[in-house]
Length: 408
Image (cartoon, rainbow, N blue to C red; front, top):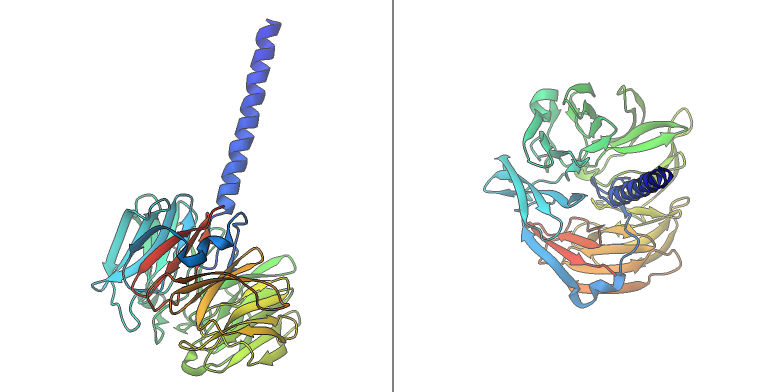
């Protein structure tokens, strides 16, 4: 009997250890997902740390390549699935692709004009079970991540009186708990993401092109919404507008995501407008500094250890720069051409509009190129690259997506 009891205890202990190991592996797996635009933390920084920057040299190793139709949508990654969008024959198509080989697992299509600079702009958001997508014409869908079946749908223009933007609705939906945050109307819309029911909607009107960004003041979370002509601070649960900081840009293109840090928020726009840091800790927003040293047309900066790295300039002409978040002082500048970027650890991954890929050291000391792939895609590439699960995903406006293997 004693022997049987010891064996039973040993089996139970092994089971507990295995269960803990599986749970930890699952958690680690989830932590490596890229669940929405600019990643799960909305900062443009990949959670992959064990990757090989040199793997892209001379074009690198292509894991797979596919075409999803015209557009500028990036990818969301959850487990073994990738979610993205494109447009073919005036139909938006939502794809679930296999992480392994890029094969289509399911597709969901609906009528939507391709428009000028054709195709969708917003990137899907997912919790692994549900997927949320937004079209340039305001079609908002919640889909089953395994099957593509519609769970609920809305139209931001007809249901909430949001006005469309000159180049189409572009702000990617953002998941926050059981809420879905959207940049539309004057300063945002929030829905219950499970049911699709409205939690609140700001007054009818025009929003901005950027995604809403969650920030904290003390222990309370709010969202920064880059609207048509101002940056807004809004209570997520109630829709109460806390403050507004005026920021008018040519053609009303406020497209790069706001970047919060320690009670301050950085914003930047193109058309020679420039950038500013706003202190939001007082009773009214206060400008810390304003400069034309960083002019993000639509590619958002990344913030690493107090320094901002981003593309300064409009399409056709741009430079990679590093500036100090606190002062706006330029640390260095290097002409890689107009493009977009993401980061991983202490490296920047930069894709220029010509389809050339670079890895650069994220250091304020000096520009230091670590590796380059040359031309991996035909132009025009305006969508930011994504590093997730040892693959770098790059896309051009034609809808070609290439996955480069950068595993060690």
